[in-house]
Length: 548
Image (cartoon, rainbow, N blue to C red; front, side, top):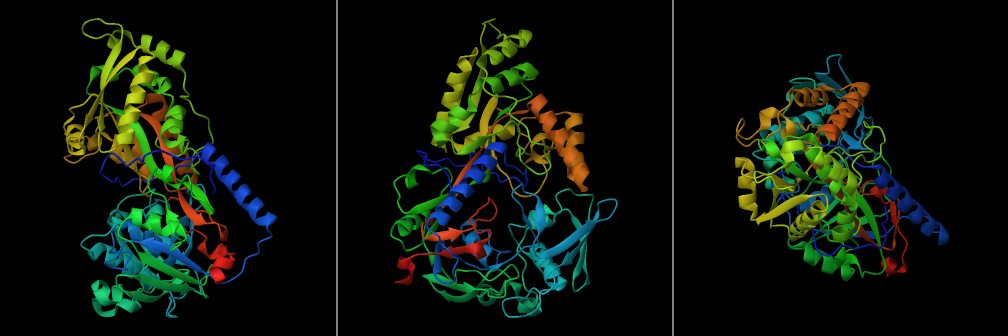
């Protein structure tokens, strides 16, 4: 979707270096409105010049130089755009992050939710013409299991067994009912016939990939580029753009320069780096939410934070929209919980903790003696830990300090190195911290809030806030195990309401990013956080420049 002409100074990198295995399906009413506005702008522009789809032209993108083109074995995120073009997954997600069929035709759980049967679509072929079958799915899961490392290891960790029933049907049995089962089917599928005799780790084969995706591999030119061409038999329709050239660049700065020089015509904006693109002409920018969630966490071993009114006072006392506007020029979405508000399993709702300084003061005064310091001063005091790896987040911490002073809180910002930051979180040597999670597509928030995940209970656990409540443990269990649609909705609505009421985190916002596209590109350009080239077959080019 196209975004308004706002740009950010500086950039924001995720503070917590640990990438958590969670998918909190998010979005929100604000995001939906911006998305619809962007679509309207795009349609209006195309209609005004009467541009009609036409075949031809070349898409040029940049990635880092790959060591493998096997998507199951590659952990280099910069290469993901190439894999979107070459490979397909069993499921994808709709605009509300609900799993929808892709290579899969349909699926069904047994009554207990421990067994999932998947039926594949008919007529799908690999790029060499070989039919796609259930054997390929089983082979891919075997590869993930056997690989020394893979970005998809977590996707199969809850699986007890899997088998091919026939050429079109697969059965997967889980260790227990698993609500994230469908989300974990979003991994690229490999061709079993291409890797006969155990050659899945063969370097030569892995540099000449075969997929089922919208584009087919043509040529790898060492140290230069990869060439692709349209898959005219792709099951969702032959792409309009006939060729793709994938150039190798050493870093994002070089990719940006290549885009400025029109050596490439699509570039993915770096995390929060809006300012860089402020003066660019002849471009279109399509904004989408990214799974980077920012929050304030409390150390619940500290008596001062055990009063619910104190945590609510902090939530009311922070003007989150002002933070987004000042540091991200409005490119983000305020949220009350780590769950995206427009996820399919949550009802639409407005913010509970909209900025209200007077309400914050009132709640703080209702905190009772816990608000008083040992010296019986009137102000509530606490230390806010932040990593100096991210200068923007340090500035935000200082801004929060100013805001909370207005409601009677004294905040001391502690800016430390990322190593010390993480060490202090693990040891519990903090009062509160400003942090963030990058969320992945597995529906499970156990890691952040379950009492079993406290670092002193489980070494390496990520429940840094030391939160313990059997009621929340039960809600997390219910969301993990829910597989039937109504049960999923009820479980997540209950969890969402608990997080709003108890405020274990003061949620701030989810950030947004964008792809920047040469303005000669038209069509259904609709990137999402997990698919920058969604509906790539509906993109097309209208430009005399491309024909020269």
